[in-house]
Image 1 (cartoon, rainbow, N blue to C red):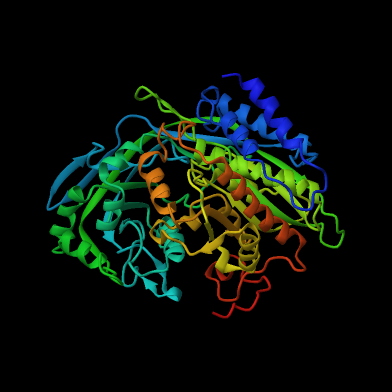
Image 2 (image 1 turned 45 degrees about the horizontal axis):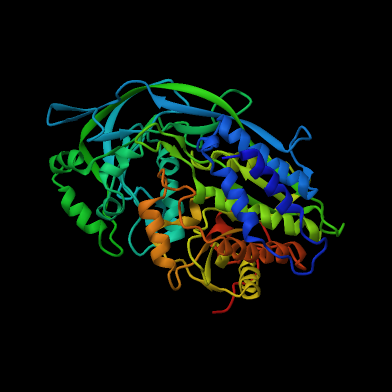
Length: 539
């Protein structure tokens, strides 16, 4: 494949549009050109810190240059460089469970999966075990799993996920905070046990399959990996079969715990397990330099030019896993399609010069844990304030979609803007069709939400052929080598997806007021308590 020819073609497509067009035309072949380049085998899956990722980053920077955007990197370039640490286990970890005076050593992945540490080269901790239900410590929200428990200096055992019936976005957020809550209570380690529901969604064999990658995180100027749970010495996931004896010894069969957790509203109460555990493992570290590709468009209205609307899409994928006949994970849909549509929205917005400024960012390290977005959200590259963010992540472009889902739209005044954008583009706006996945907390925009910034990200909807196409992609191609250019892309769908997002970004950038959290939004109250709020919309 002639990659240089593709690059030249993509550049020509990107600039060959009438200046200052009232209604920009989104060219399906432009989306195709970007995806074709970014998903090529020569980029070897765009893993963070790899040569293939660097090529992709330079490609995006060249697109920004062609659009006339300004570099936003701290050194005057289009790159915000960061160091990313990759931690892998050095040898087999050891989890020893002692109950009834007998020690059982677990080290096989069929029994336990241990997460490598980014902060300690070697870990060795021993402590009593305490079961804390789902591990939620938010009495203010009605979750009091630590009530009556003393976990200081102990290892907390929790169920994965969240109680059935909990609003999915709230549950997903709290699920991601379990280690933080355990640490604040004084725990030294966390062991998770998959529930019946979680196992049905992700069987143990699948967990083992995806566990061979490194843990990743960004490294600060002090040479230490950033961690929100630095006092948690280790974390592991225990196969329910291996966990069952712990509960039996305490007179609380795990099957009954699972049965209660599987009921709507079920919240198993915590108790001391009559056992202790020792967890030991060693880690090897590799630090690599990667970069977010960042650009900006100055606003045309001096009164609000210091307010930035952000556009983000992750540029990385998971690289070369070295297994099977096709060992490259090209990430054509995840997330070459998102970057491609972001680039086409950027091209159109650059010609409009809206009132507010716009920040554009192709991000590194999303697959490793939203690393590049976290770094950017905490280390701003713009001289002003990011007031709202639109994220592009894995639109499934294999069918002619007629609706979109806007995750997060109900939390802020961005919602009506998205609804109007969808209407202008000729599609409808649908509610979250997969609340069990907690998607609002799983992509790059969420790191900005945690800094108080209202955000949305859209996906192609489930109407008509949408549900089958989307679920088929997740089942057969997500994070697999088959996510490549052999998929039956519908490039017209790519152009339409760009159009919906264009109207959204332009609406936000030209609005009379900056986006505001709604007064009743959990995320607005949690992360922007002091910010001015808008009245909740009437239903």
